[in-house]
Image 1: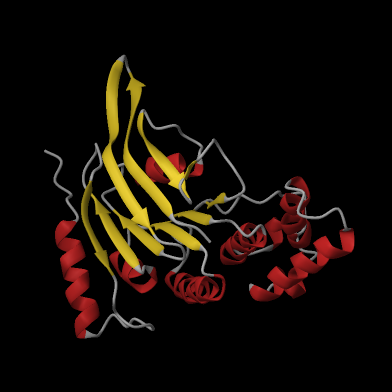
Image 2 (image 1 turned 30 degrees about the horizontal axis):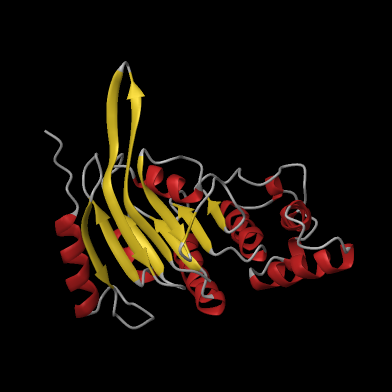
Length: 253
């Protein structure tokens, strides 16, 4: 578990010989075990922000610290789960998909121990009976469970999730929201979760921020004090929903 500091980062790209400013002086402070949900208009820079935190992108200015130390590129302490269902190795089984990154990061050289870790996390995400299945034999929701299990098995300090449930049907999405929240309560991994869904942001987040239009800035931030389970029909939930929705700027012209 860790504390995360994003200090005044900015990021731009060159597009058609012009500079495109994507992030502008963004600062975020998370305590160990926080669950941050990030809202913002489509294309505002949410994915760029967490790609910078992951180390897949380098900010033009500012710094990103974990436990007071600057991050240095991509590392196993910061792992990403994407929206894409095809983030698993298609030629490996569920068990092999979980074991492979454990081997790659030298978690253990003992095959029995590695299989025991995989067994534990397959059980946690209710996929033990599919241990020998390949990704193309799984539903989208099941593949996301494997991706989450694979990441948590490495015990990351920060788990970054870029709209991981965005392409799922409503019922599967609700089930995975509940399961993810239970996993977070169990492991207390620091999570940063991007979503376009205000309801999802409230259901999951212990902290919520709203980014403004590109170049993105932190337009609004709040601590979510609604007790779990968070029911959309309650007065507290609807009040926060209206407040967050009011900060979602969509007008571009």
